[in-house]
Length: 446
Ligand code: PFF
Ligand code: NA
Image (cartoon, rainbow, N blue to C red):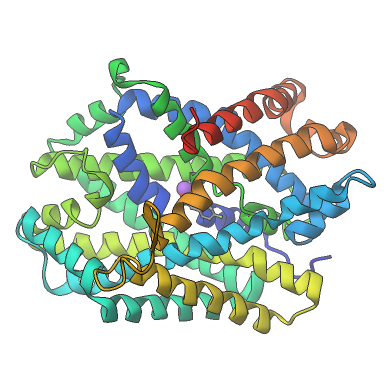
């Protein structure tokens, strides 16, 4: 039984802090760009509602009813003698996998905050060479910032749910929202804003193929932090008598609105200063700094603020990636929080160094296996295999394994009768099929 619980607003901000991450501000704009804008955004919104939201509620339910770490929660909720379900709790390990590269990327962001104070690249070529030089050959800079990220995150986690995670989110999330809203407000005054609106919302149906659906489902999932025990673990510390459905609506709303606002803002800046939206992963680290340079002096100011917001989004997600395994060792092995936090921190720190080195010219060969280096393998295994697999298992678990009555007794009146039916149906039939399709396609089977 958890003693230190979140407050109501603390839970919502912590869960939204987990959801709002690099996925919203860095990934969503560039995949929307690559998938042709409007039609993709529409499909994404529908999948968030139908699939993302329904798994979000399930994952919250498992944590809220189980009140323990992932493994123990599954164990206590599973029907008797069916305790293989508890292995679903090991989805928590995925968070550590993700942290090996997430930490490195947050490190780059911190570096960009610092360099934005003095200089911005005056051309795309310069921006590209700055970024690739750091990535491929500047080991000491990356190591320095990766170490810093490790220290910050581990320190926060040693302070626990209330004093660490909740405090961090109460501080960082409102700040992040103010920065993004402020920059968005400025973007609305620029001529290119209407172009950006058109790009995000006018559907170009000819760009849509099955691949776009798959991308949308995968992202709906990743963006809401589903499938790695993060939401589950936070939900175990939700205050008693919480309204899960209401909380889930808040989390989904914040995550979606921030992605859309960030996208509209970035595209406005890119159009205004003559860059195109379809720029891939380099959008934030290469195209955007050049755009900030073009803005003149206000550009430096915006660059710093923007990278601070991005760092905040990353940090609040990062703590949620590590916390599930910490709780596991505290609950199951009676480790102290200090010991669990430092051990899990060291784990992602050390493997993070391997991930970092695997991008560099000097170690690339040594640290590549088959078609990918270590950094990309971690991303691929986690996002393409472990997340959707856990999603599938959770949908089936709540949809079929846990007695319907138990589920009803908590969320039916929160949903209302009709919405409950729709949700339960989606959980049993629509979501599993979607997850299976997603898995097959990500594994390149279909
Ligand atoms: N939801 C985060 C994002 O959109 O960047 C990524 C993430 C964080 C996924 C935490 C999963 C998680 F547990
Ligand atoms: Na997100």
